[in-house]
Image (cartoon, rainbow, N blue to C red):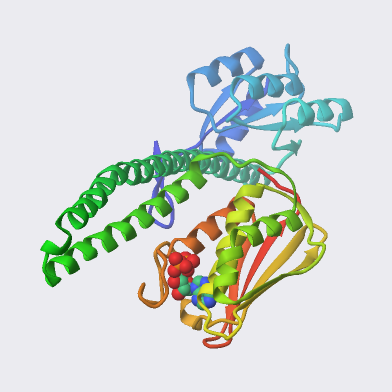
Length: 382
Ligand code: ADP
């Protein structure tokens, strides 16, 4: 049976089971609750358990003194067989041991002292029913959340797989186009006119760029697919590798890379950390028109668990409105003819930082250089 609540929705009438060997008490409870609840009555534990097996009961109100199974043992039994039924114990006099048993083993929602008045009884049943609904709603939301998480994890995995497959499958035909356009250039030599030569070099340029894009996509999907290899990683060593990888870039630009002495040691994937800082330092040198393009790296402790590595350059800077978007894949602020690149570097940086449970942001103003601040925890958590 259902009843219309004041706000108009229809809610199921909750069933309440009163377990008491006194028919008069059962009758009084049924009378007090009849307007709002369906009331069932049982004279002892066995009868109560039989009714619980046959009906969807919301709340059981159980006298402590019962023939056979005592109230505290009955609520324990009910908890095991029907954990969703909210349990209340009714006591005529306070019995420490029985009460402790009902709380610890029966996990009762509360207890009522005899003699109760009708208001108190109705209020107690109301809160027990509301608590049960909340608990059920919580469990439903938890199940939905779990299902959404599973769906999301599956979709993410499919997307990663798709990106990897697309990038991988694009490489082969691209390589063929590149090779054929090179054959054409070599074989036709002087026989192509100026337009023809331009078309050929256009094909070569575009396929070369596509190759770089596909490689970056593969690198990104690798970051997702290859597990991290966490070890104690001295950042001194990371920057020694960055310096050696960028040696010719620094020389070619007539620039400088200054790294603070005694950098911290943290738990991380050293290969990924090298890629992260190599991208930031390379950008600091590339987006730079200063006479001596300079990148400075410093470290400071944020607290006992976290360090901040600042990569500062004296380059062209980044307008405020782009400072968040540049971390999105393929977001670039300049034409390729001005500054070469694919726009994947900072997306890779962000992915690596997030895999280390860190954060990255940039402080900059146009024309005034940029500082990329990378915060990393000293200890890795999976
Ligand atoms: P790419 O270097 O291939 O262009 P990134 O993802 O590394 O791609 O960078 C995205 C964009 O952010 C760059 O194209 C550039 O416009 C801007 N940017 C990145 N680093 C800097 C920097 N240090 N100074 C100025 N602009 C930068």
